[in-house]
Image (cartoon, rainbow, N blue to C red; front, side):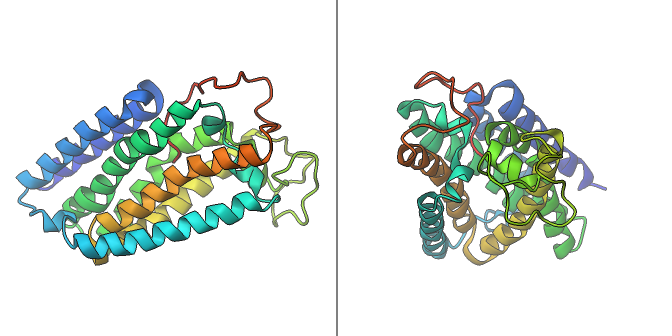
Length: 277
């Protein structure tokens, strides 16, 4: 029973940071996340976990593995932006409405310190270690991965509002407005039945995000096992930060005439200053 209290404290810290970063004080996410990360490390250290137990090890191996994976992410994003059929998927309002200075802030400050730091230390370091005191190792990893998926519910709701192409795709429609999908996935509504950005698309996008990030949590934990926290951190960082670069490039290739960005002033900041999930 002595391990229950620190585990509850850990979940409470993560839940509070999630709400603060996504609903209350988005621009202050780096500060909130740094404070939450410190609190989690204090909890874990008081429970007797050594730094290697929390993933602070194998830095060289982690840098090599993470760097290679980051290069792969860059290659995939480049191909996605270059192909007209997938380019609309990178048209995210949260990036499209930002000034160049704010775009750099998101990619270089908000993502590494407001998102990656807390999520990697929390879900790949502290939470699995605390869960490992109560459950078998595999159960601890699975529970941490599921928690990581649920952590993305609020960001996924914001993403559904900011990226209509993804919402349309989740509804079984073509990501490009006015075009007809080659073949809607089995069990989804037709284009006429589900309006773009409707509740069905949002629900499917949120559910898909939770499932995909939970699976990513398992992969990230395996990377952490092999290369310490640095390996999944670099992959995580590249996935999010390169996403802003991809959105900027997609807008430039399209001459800035993104169908979902019409009516917004040039350089206007989005109401959602949070990092991409």
